[in-house]
Image (tube, rainbow, N blue to C red; front, side, top):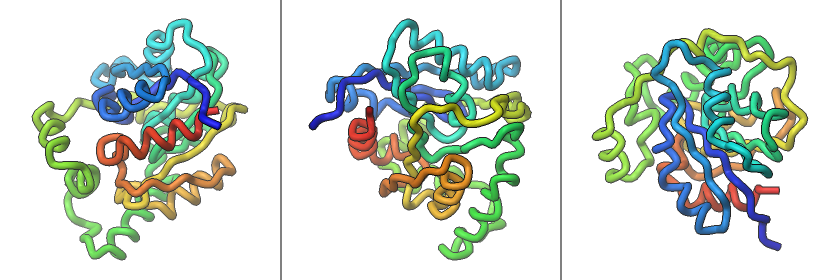
Length: 231
């Protein structure tokens, strides 16, 4: 039985550009789904987690039966949509899964990400003390033409405002939630995401053969997973 038609709300991570989803959106539309993918006010120092959620709600309008897909940092504000729109499901991709009262800035240490990435770098033969490099962390498995386009667009500015704001919910909302993790994610190693998803959400992860940015490196495969998981 094929998955029913849904409206996918595709939320980008840090930087807030809907361009991140530009290779996935047409595939989902070709499968008969509706797609909404807003730009977020990431460069606005007055905008935080609540404002990001408000922009997403405005973009959705009156659409119903929403499958909200949150990339990375978007996991911090995607749950805020539940109860304010007809959210049927949350799908988190390479996510920063929050805990109550934890800010995105605190998450890196309190979640164990920093230690996990360091251990993974050492196992893979990378220098854990090397300066951060976007090609190594983000684009190592992304096709060259997509990397070139991303670099030509320039790095979007991300305000520090949301990183200082505690996650406002007391618990994860009572909505079906799943997690997709990259087997080759160098930023959020697979074992780390598996533990985080189990400890904070009580779910296993669906593993895709990608790094941290599957929407750019494996768009057809990611769209297939999203389609299959839609309730």
